[in-house]
Image (cartoon, rainbow, N blue to C red; front, top):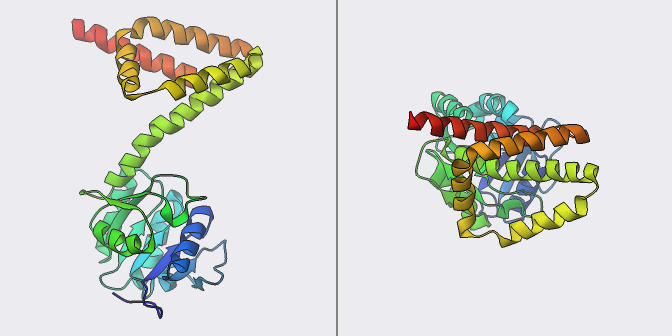
Length: 267
């Protein structure tokens, strides 16, 4: 392992936007030498500015790619020539398990060890303390390098894409819940009862417990036919209120699928 003049690791951070910038600054404050590159955001002290991806990766123990899923492969292809033997390329971008697997394959073809890193909470306000899930060949090294610097890293025993998949499964719930709340409150505003619905939602979320998930799942299956009609009516009401019923329509369609599957199972 190489080390900075202060004895800490050398870490390259590709992408110095909101997430990458915060993580890079925290790494530097924790004693790492951080080589930063972002074509749109200049790296300023305490970061060491690099001329490109490969230049940033040169001599680094760990490369953190924190740009975007769209740019992840290009960053890897550009940066791989600078990665020293034994170093790890860690992709922190929110991407599908398929893309993470493709990145791992591309890294392997170039003799670069790879880790799939999933950022499990918003980075602003947490920085390096943001919980991370890591899978893939280089996962243990990511934990060994970042843990002593203050990162919270959980290693999953599995292939690249496992960590990304866990994050996205949570996203289906959390972002889906957020979308449902936004749509419901928008409709309630149009109906003149936003404050009432907001308090009702707060009450339901506050009262939620371990049995809530079972109740939601079992109820959806048991009452799928009735709830399909209910959500069709809800979607129609939102249309009448001038609110696009995106979540309501999706809920109707999911319940209709459950009802059809239950009817098919009886046949």
